[in-house]
Length: 501
Image (cartoon, rainbow, N blue to C red; front, side, top):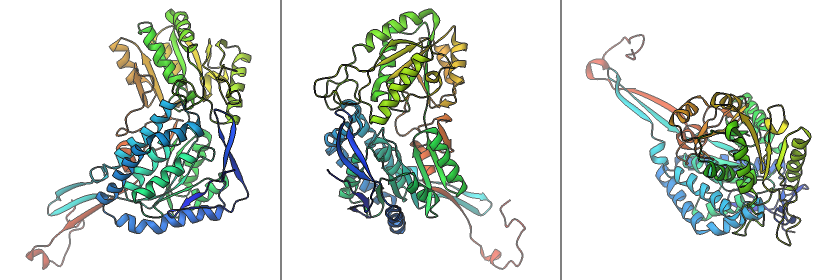
């Protein structure tokens, strides 16, 4: 049984813990190794390594820091297939989805490489007569990243680490304890690229040790991705200890399907969004609010297309729908399907016990599932299932559909399918969703634009990616300077505002 190590100060070390997390291949259900629940001392060791590395890394010019990240990008491309296979084997993403996961890590690295430009501040000569002001953006110190299971490459090494270290900070990553291999391998890649020891440190641990991170005075900020209840607690804890925090949380994304949509293409887009990554992404479409005049046709076409989706091992390039990542969550998704039936929703397509290739019967597979006539009172209508389960709600017109969508406490993404420019514009203006798709099922912007969830899908002021990321991982410093001429050097009195008015 392989026992994974933790990564601190440029070394992979054996943990002294007595608690280990079993790692599974979700396509087979087999145990593939164990990850340590790092001890409190080991987590403190990671923080101390990051603290010790910070002064020299901060003093390294941004151009030289990004030269290392150029090398990281080259190595991510070089090892793309290896990393994609790791994602398949530990997370269960189908091959193309895994390639995309790694691709998003590359995209985040490319954003970080722009640090010399995006860290630039502002300046004004003669802000007041004879007084010049310059605003700089400076690193802050040690940041912590707390990572979920669903994107082993993109989230830690696309959303978190690259811009953090490009700005001159150091980082302690709490990798997902059930899917840590990809993060550990990319940590090794950073070392190969020449990142100094201690700039990136990676541990796996429990909530107890996370509290150590949250409370540690040398940790300046927290970036978190996960559930809303946990994200809110982390945000509150960070605020109480004076730390900067961004908490990206869960969703219940809706699409409004108008009667003038291109029906077949709309269904294809919905299926891609709802069932991609087995529905285990915070931008998955979990509900469609369909105009009643086309609802029956839409549901029939949806069932027809969804039935053609095959389940199979993640690394098989013919597989369209891979497994749920771990057994406990698989059981929860199956229970949610039963709850939907019990609460009175119409089960149009049942994804429980899907047909899979021989040898993979013990994998954590749930096939495409469709519920119709779902209401807000039903649990599956309100709460995120985080699996390949799509709910259909019905509405009479645009206004009712938009009201149903905006009633959700979550607002990560929202989508409309229509050929009407008027309704598209009205939707973009009045939807609560932070990321809006018009005939786009997964409205995730490219990395130089912030990932901007709203309401209970996000806690904080600065989002990840884009210019927000640079603002989050730096603080501004304004410097005002004034140089005396010969006459002023002789002055014995100073104006109350010292020339600043």
